[in-house]
Length: 129
Image (cartoon, rainbow, N blue to C red; front, side, top):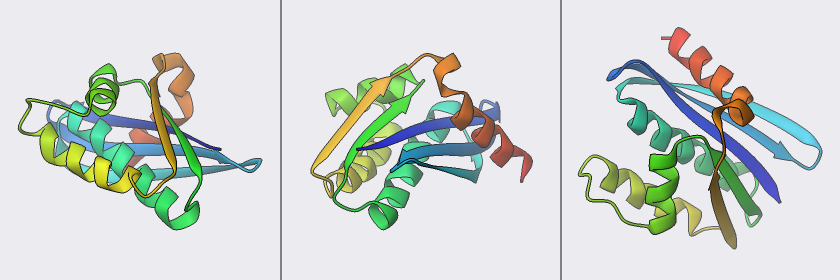
């Protein structure tokens, strides 16, 4: 099982944004920071999950994925597989398309203090812009 921590951050809302992805796989840890440009914090959170899924498709195909995020909004939208928010709907569709390539995809909410690695990586991405 691949364990994936994701976080999105914005300097302002909207503002310069970044995504952080921290992956634990096979005893190894992988860290990624992605500058995202001008987005809201929630959009950055969705994009972090999309980036993580893209990494997993390339590096860990056919694995079981267990994602963790400190964004209740994003986790709820993905778990319920529905949103009325017009900004979030296309992002949900991309996430749905990407996770369907895996045999199992789980996502759960975790408190911010348990998502420190991904948070540091997301904030690093903001500074890279």
